Length: 108
Image (cartoon, rainbow, N blue to C red):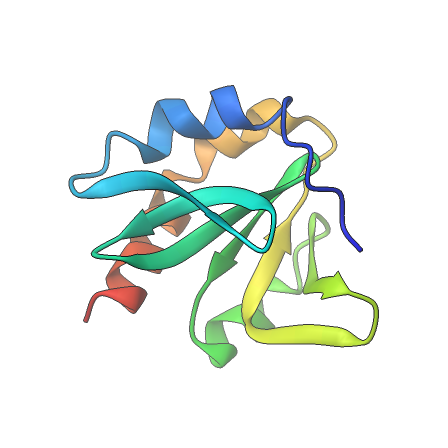
């Protein structure tokens, strides 16, 4: 199971994500995360963040060196989620466009 402790990432992502209109904190399966209109779109996992996006977009993001499939439990890959896990968690502050894209995806 992926790490649910997100002490390193939460302050960084809070500073960006909680500024998006309508976004609030939430929890799902033990992971802290963010939701909009009652729908989770991002989950904090250790030093990274998993975001919900269309399968095609997830596939393109997996070409990044800091991205991998979101597999919260071994053998259970969530197809519309991708885990972004940079070497430096502070770089998650630069992913605002990705967070906005995820919000738009869950609130068509």
